[in-house]
View 1 (cartoon, one colour):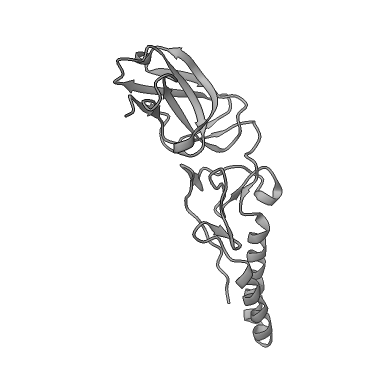
View 2: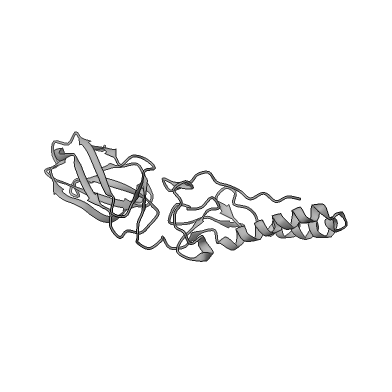
Length: 206
């Protein structure tokens, strides 16, 4: 049972480099003499620490202010408050995002070429629709391509199961530090609490 209730940062908040990240909490603990306040990322069941923001402070202080520095950018973060010698009683905040000057997360999820292919054949299909004498041959080719390159559905993309270590960062389920994976890091509007939100599936016009 958690002995700490974290009141801030709020769910889906967005912070930037040099911002003060304000952490506040209440506690019911009568045993912890001190707590650490740790910034972490990853799935709630397996949070990975990034930096200890405040160390060995009294639990009833109830706050820790941390100046955001050079962290991995545009990733879903959470805050842990608790005593390392009293596992299972720490409090975990809601997820929030930091736009930092650090590196983007490694490539993960669906490579961009799949989406480019889908968009390209969407355009081809529209052109074909206006040219009646090409419809049969071109649509046959499009349908063949679409059968092997599919839009992201149910955590798959291009027929490959999505197994990223990080939450998806674009509406099309890919993210990271190279052009093949969007190249812009996590998009808070498309990623929260390790899950995709507002997923957009490209539509193929036939």
